[in-house]
Amino acid sequence: MLKTEAIDVQKLRADFPILKRKVHGKRLVYLDSAATAQKPQAVIDALVDYYSRYNSNVHRSVHTLGEEATEAYEEARAKAARFVGSSPKGLVFVRGTTEATNLVKFAWGEKNVKKGDVLVTTLMEHHSNIVPWQLLAKEKGATLKFAGLLPDGTIDMADFEKLLKESPRLVAFAHCSNVLGTINDVHAMCAKARASGATTLVDGAQSVPHMPVDVGAIGADFYAYSGHKMLGPTGIGALVAKKELLEDMDPFQGGGEMIREVFLDHATWNDVPYKFEAGTVNIADAIGLGAAIDYLNAIGMEKVREHEVRLLKYALETLSKAKGFHSYGPSDPQKRGGVVSFNLGDVHPHDLATILDEEGIAIRSGHHCAQPLMRWLNVAATSRASFHVYNSYDDVDALKAGLDKAGSIFRL
Ligand SMILES: Cc1ncc(COP(=O)(O)O)c(C=O)c1O
Image (cartoon, rainbow, N blue to C red):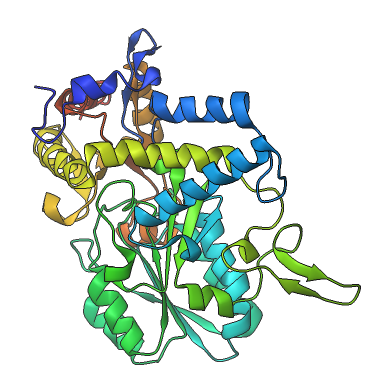
């Protein structure tokens, strides 16, 4: 029952120490991986190994520890780049997707966006793919426009193409929505946006952890992702871009290691990607991300995706039998990632999450950092269950039982 045919979940759960814990005396049913995923022992071990065996700064010291740390950090960069079909010179380590979009805002946007320019994003975005462009538009006297959505929660491509006729400077959109689960046709969207002369940015926070991604094939100028949503540590993520594009950009932050030479009146910059990694970098977590990537590669991202599609299909079928259940986003599991956002009658999502917590079930409730989307859905908040490799049908069954209990408490 625990097997989705793609993954032997029973076996794999043993790799995640946190899944052994109980919450309110019940088995932890963790359904909040879209917020942050749990970490396998291999990732925890990689962090402990770095701190207990070769903790040292990178790119500076010639002693043994310094060289070992530098080698491990750069090996992690190579893994993080290969994982999304990129090259190490085109991968900047950042804190996560939010820092990646802000880096682009500062280092690319301030140089390239001018008064009167148009920037385009969509109504389904996370705030981290909206607010940096609002700030940029305000600073530069540019206008930020939003492509609308169709009732099934997909992007209105006619509206998107209409906005492209305005020759936008930047077009930024999610690969996969963290609320609707919608997987956007990023290949087509990048091709169309580039044909209109725009620079493209794809937010991969909810795609890279769950499906095979090839940034080169997608054709995005910038592609961002977060390590903590893909079984890696917090505080590490990546901005992937073509080397030439990074070379043409201004630095993000000034400080140690991002320079080539410093004079009293000016400085020159290090090669990319180091030009964008000022100060002491997040060495341990980059190495931990490398371990998470090894773990996911050992399963195979095709299998991760297949597992989630099966789980999603089962979840949509099972949960829809709960009284008052209403979910958002495309109905076809092939067209969405592993998140199910829903409401249960008029039960407030926070109340529902509290009742489910009593059962050991962790879901997210709220606006999911997507307030414009909440307004479009005409709701203040939703509940959201999200999956990763350690979830199986038993978790969905537990959630269904929790929804039934909440339904009877609230007399739905
Ligand atoms: C679609 C999407 N974009 C961006 C982010 C921001 O990621 P981070 O908080 O890791 O910077 C998230 C996080 O939930 C997300 O789901």
